[in-house]
Image (cartoon, rainbow, N blue to C red; front, top):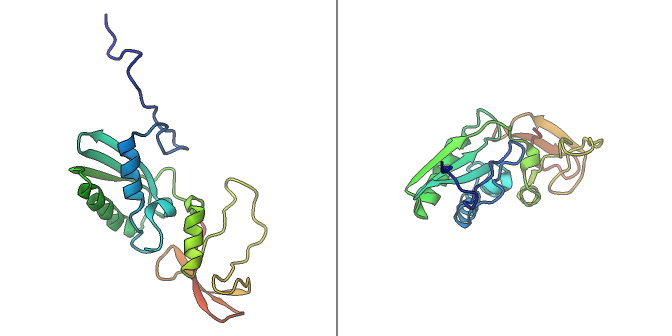
Length: 185
């Protein structure tokens, strides 16, 4: 009896929940991931979906068919629909006829998923980046929010919500400038 797969056929290991990227993506998957990852976030266009950490996986499912997994910053995030449509448009423009975008809620997105480049861009844009939550390291003792304009930690919370539910509105007491703070999750 012949087995359906010979030992010489390449196999792709399935990703684990803690490591959402396949161990051996194909060159086309890497290219499509870079294209999807470069899509700007609709609410924070200074960040790409990869920098924000919401792009989880890109799988080729057949010729001209691809599946993309996105994890929203929070379950009710209204921007996930715009993100999904933008990813579909970019990948269709690059030869993929059928693009399926799935919303994946587990593992949940965390502000720790924002890349160092994303944090730098937030600060440059005038938004205080989230502090590390300590999930993968020591617990932060300094709870102060640093002003992205002057660097002072003498800041005051003005509103728990700002232009989006992901951000809070604060004011620096040193330079008196208001600024958004991307809240930690």
